[in-house]
Image 1 (cartoon, rainbow, N blue to C red):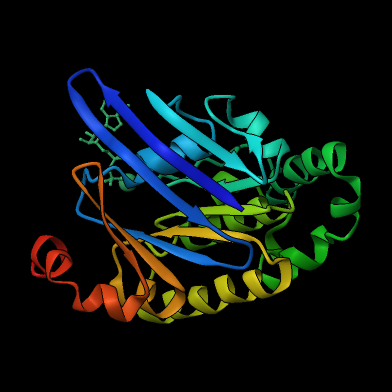
Image 2: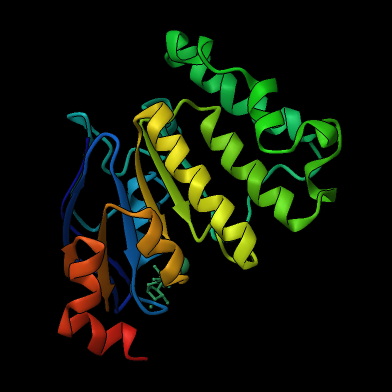
Length: 237
Ligand code: ADP
Ligand code: MG
């Protein structure tokens, strides 16, 4: 279970996060929404060790994650995708996935043994392009490859930053099913950021709304949709 306690992050004079607290449990899908610049990516970056918070604490299953770097987070089972893709473009699709799988094997061999890289690639329609350099794949396949790479890490916590960006309705519906399937199979805690509200409302158990670095509400999708503050700052746009 992920616990974020009183996390703040400033960039110079910009308060990207202010006193943010939230939790995400095993098998829970938590949505993270809010206007551009609300602090969503900053929060995911803090949780995955990419950024050091200015204040506060982050823990996964009582192991401290605060400011310990992305490798430490990956070793503890934090998998993520990036808003702007960050694959190794000259490595093949399979090699991109194997890097994550090896990380898992080193730290948690029993978890790694249960992950079949070839089967994962086939499930996400990447088997036919496994030997192609990641950077040469069409955008949609690169997005799927990022998800498979995060899954090869055997994540206890999976962070998806705008995974449906650039997808059409059909693809984002497929993705919603895929995210729920991942939850059912791995029992991972999943945090998903997206602007596509239909996607978020359909896939998430709870939704956290951020605005100007602060948590406005954390609630079930129906309650979020009816929350006047949320309608005011976000849905009413
Ligand atoms: P969101 O993902 O919700 O659109 P971000 O977390 O990317 O928002 O950004 C939150 C705020 O922090 C914005 O005002 C943004 O300009 C600022 N910010 C984010 N990253 C940096 C950075 N590396 N340096 C300076 N300011 C940043
Ligand atoms: Mg963002």
